[in-house]
Length: 195
Image (cartoon, rainbow, N blue to C red; front, side, top):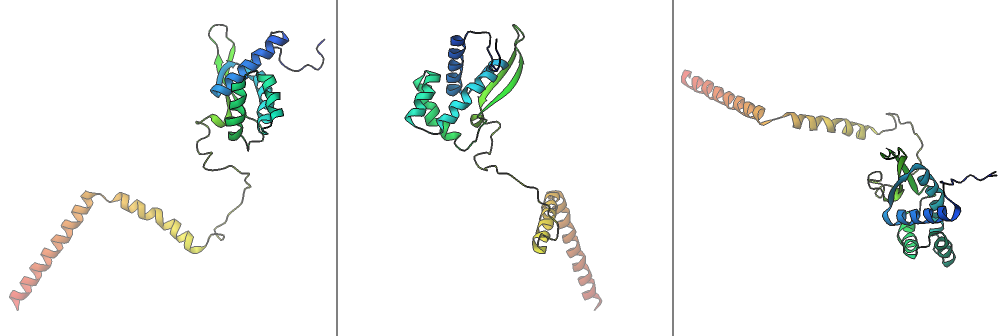
């Protein structure tokens, strides 16, 4: 009976399953993301996350423990050298599973499992700005000093005025000014003639 056994058997005997998960974990460490079935991705997540946690503390003992699971010294070296540095401040949840749909041949549900910190699409700007917990604060207009409020309100208006002006209106304005000057000259000439 299988009372209390909650891990996924994946239709394999124990030695085959262990070597398959070790091989998939090495591939994930090397390539940072792999495509597989959803069941294998979930099993791999449970397999590799404790190993990544072990890699945060670089000691000979932890390296030997991780090597007993992965059985690949290059993967262990990369895990302890590169990946542990990048995920050092993350408290857990080092991998992400994204479902991809069904496979054409046998209609198996496929997924991509990846290391969270190595995805450049989702993590744009995460290096520049560190996320912290936020609490909602209510701000009222009385909290903002009057000078800042005036500056903030007037800045967009000036930009809008600059954007609206175009060369055609500037030319017509200059023509109006020149016409006014001509009219003034005519009135001055007529005043001189009268006197």
